[in-house]
Image (cartoon, rainbow, N blue to C red):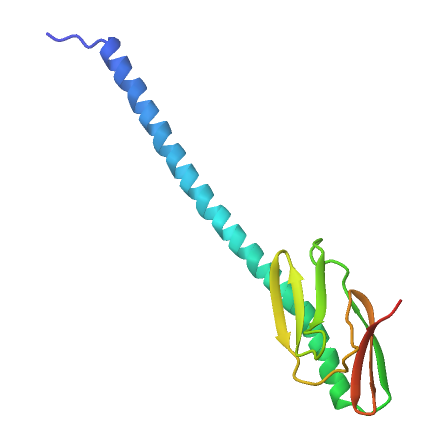
Length: 144
């Protein structure tokens, strides 16, 4: 006749099984958290690139519109002071003969080629900007 008892050996085995089970769940949680954080970072990177490209597209659209219209065209457009709460800078580069629009945002540089000639003294900035076309020349300048 056998008697079953929950002696110290069986209680020790239960404790060991519980500890192994908790360890397995912790490893699964860490892996899940790692994958989730990687996805969030990738999503934020895509969102940042899209936001930067939206600002570049706004400038490109204004330049293309100025190219298509008649002399005497004059328009004011606005660029945001921040993108998703982050500061950025925008410029026409290189300074002597601009060939591209460059935007620096969150330590990344985004660029769009200028497919038209703008005057050498053109400057673009956040906030209000004026674009004008006189004598076939397109000029961009910030509005104070």
